[in-house]
Image (cartoon, rainbow, N blue to C red; front, side, top):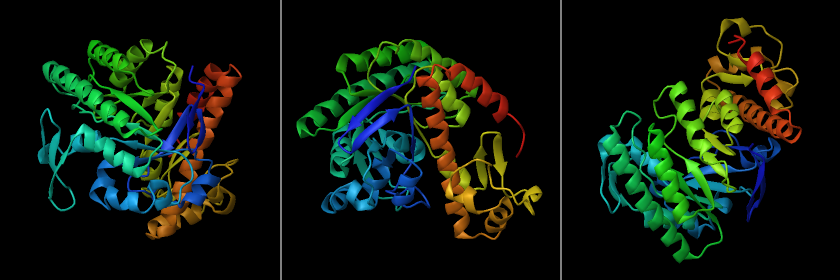
Length: 360
């Protein structure tokens, strides 16, 4: 299962790994120096959002995304495909690419596989993604099949442009196919024929039930056992999802869950999730989690954090996010250690037994 190393020009990353999302060249509420202290090894940036604001030409002029945001570690950039997928009423898909209107000001743009790669090249990311189409989970089979074939053609064009630019970063293909197991396999085979530095699984956690996601994911991973390149599950997820993914061989994850939930008062512990807004924490002197080494847990009580959150204080976003990110980093480290020591199954069982306790 899952152990490995991803080598980039900004450092080596031990796999499996979780990548915090830095959509607009920032992991919300947390400065880069703190991300380093939290032992974050790689972050994700968003091609679509950075293309619209401030623009990839400006970021190139400022020395690339690493320098622009003062982050010295590796960066993975997505292709913009998922964001375009979410703009259902504002976009039109053609063979050439996608015409869409900006969610910011309504201005019209046209994003192609070639332009997506050019934007990522301007950003200077270490891992880049091919441009893909992400169909809705309830799309009919005929649409999903046409979509994955379009994604394959776009993947080939993305790779051609990546090779033309001649950069030394990595390019990942994206497996699509909706919740159709045989179409997932067809998509995978087509991408393997093209050849990529790594392989991502897109189109999960887009509205399907967790049981369906797990079923299709495990089926797809059965066909990826011989692949030595990194395998990346996009946009997932909760701790139990990461555990299931690693069990099935996934090595890379990203999700907004730890940062978004932190801003909404949702905090993670190895015994379950806490909603800090609840009255039970009014006079609770304990940290979020005993034994956690994050700055928040070493210095502040649940009572104080509840007060900050209910008062609408900006500090609540920072302190809550610091804890959640540290939880996810500790969680991934424990998984890596259990894999090295051949104790993953026991770790998984123990975690799920404790994590399912209702302490919210």
